[in-house]
Image (cartoon, rainbow, N blue to C red; front, side, top):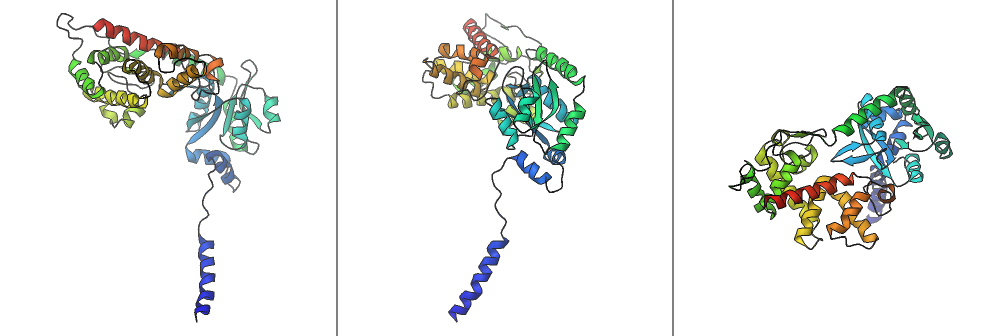
Length: 366
């Protein structure tokens, strides 16, 4: 009897195992799209369904870099222009060099390669040129050999006028980079009474939350917005402490509350406290302030890159004066393409100047 039950149970087990869904392999999104396309759906249709175009490129001022949560660089601007024409968003994946960049597209880590090489190199890599192709810029775009719908769409989009139009738009954005629409207030509301602004009570609350001198937070606020709660940057940063929408959301601030002075300053205090915790390896509290300010402005990833460079070249990675030269260095290919750098190019002069201006103003506040 037991034998009969066992013989009956084995086939049932086999059927049950066979009917289970095979676990999905950890393939990338672009490869899964091409796999789906081979089943009858075009590669471009699948990209449209995903809602994003994955573009691989190399970090640099002429290609792509992250600026306060917004993408800049000509290659990014071109990719964004094409993506918008298709109702898509752009997701950038960075490569360390051209060889890695081509390999990323070939194995399906990205839909498009935007790279500074000619068509011959693309063909040698087994990819097909599509879209941007400009000899003066020495740049071409590439897609996988079977991504025909995407290739055709790119060729139709890129005309003789496309590059000039996108370049003009990018130049306009670069002019706006350092502009914040704000109504500057006086540096001191009443020097005799020690009143810096009408928002001093908010800065004092933030001081209690962060452990920073309230006058330091006031100095940072003046640098960010000039004490204008309605200040807005071209990239979408808002309020007294110029919080980006994504940062504000991460800090639990609703979109319709970002401009509220109390909410804005309190959220900035939470960000300062968070960054201070992430930089707890900087032992000296005064030095840590400088690193936190730099991270608030330029992003902690770039600051960590500069610290890694300082360490590599025998400098003290926990002293701002020894790291600041590498913050500036991240504007140079020699440094932003260094293997220890994970976040690429940044406008280091702005971040270094930001820290210096705030510290000088803080000292002036007494």
